[in-house]
Amino acid sequence: MPSIKDVARLAGVSVGTVSNVLNRPEMVARETRMRVEAAVAQLGYVRNGSARQLRAGRSTTIAVVALDLTNPFFIDVLNGVETAAQDVDVNVMVVNSSKDAAREARLLRMFEEERPLGVLITPVNASGQRERLGGLISRGIPVVTFDSSSRHSYGCAVSVDDVLGGRLAGRHLLDRGHRRIAFAGGPFPVRQVEDRHHGLAGVLGPDSELTVIPLPDLTVATGRQAGKELAGLAREERPTAVFCANDLVAMGVLQELTQRGLRVPADVAILGYDDIDFAAAAAVPLSSIRQPREQLGRTAALMLLEEANSPGGHEHRHVVFQPDLVERVSTAHP
Image 1: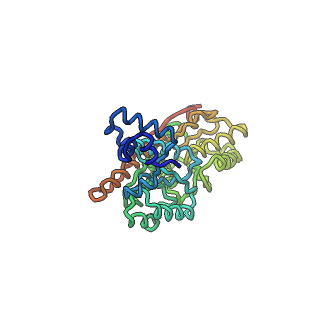
Image 2: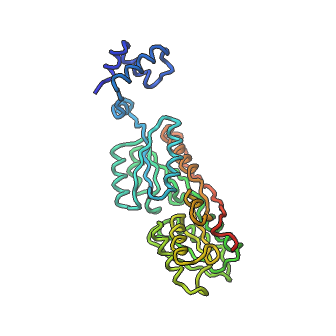
Image 3: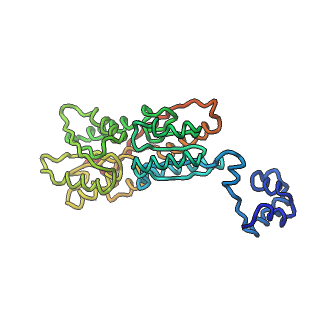
């Protein structure tokens, strides 16, 4: 493999000049810079990022531990993270805990050894964060939790007010005349599921009936299970609307209900959560509670970089974004 010395020899300059071209090109005369760049291209030179980090004594990579990369919500959050990182020439490494606490623990131990610039994480469980993340903190590695309740965090946190999201969903369905309403989501130890259910239940009056359909996960497949359960109820017992804990569940409910001959929204209205792109593109466009997904990721990354660059003067803070409702066909008046 060609080295930086080979590039310097071919370009007829010093190793320091090559280093400046690679790291501070504005300091090098245009003609010299072009000669070095031509030598880099001719030799196929690629600088050794690991060695450069060792010399600098500092990583240039932030790690992201996503909860579930099969959910488009997290892909949008990551776009926001990468936008913030690219602005300051920082790399992003993404790993997936797959909602598995044991896998999350292994990943955190790996990062204790690798010493990234910082770690962004949506914890599998909201409680017990101090114990699980303490190893990183004790080694001076900043941690920011995102899409996680600030009440369980002892560092910086970025989240969305999911209780408010549940209230928005409930008020919207009540305004459409629904009094028999179902909530489909789970598992309930997941903070987001609990908060969204709590917000919905809090706005329903004594003349309303809430049916909870507990699910083992928030996927299209479990949404189809919820849809099957709804379709199996007699018409006079069936909820006239269902609020789903995320859009993937809502899409599964929609698929199952329509395949079983039920009309959306005439027979059952459906409201999702997250407002991923697929919600608007569904066969019956889905109403949804929208989260500012990319802004969530960008803000979390900026807070992490701020702490990494000024650890002594940094003050932890919690940023809570407000969701809003996007109405589409699935909850429109029949």
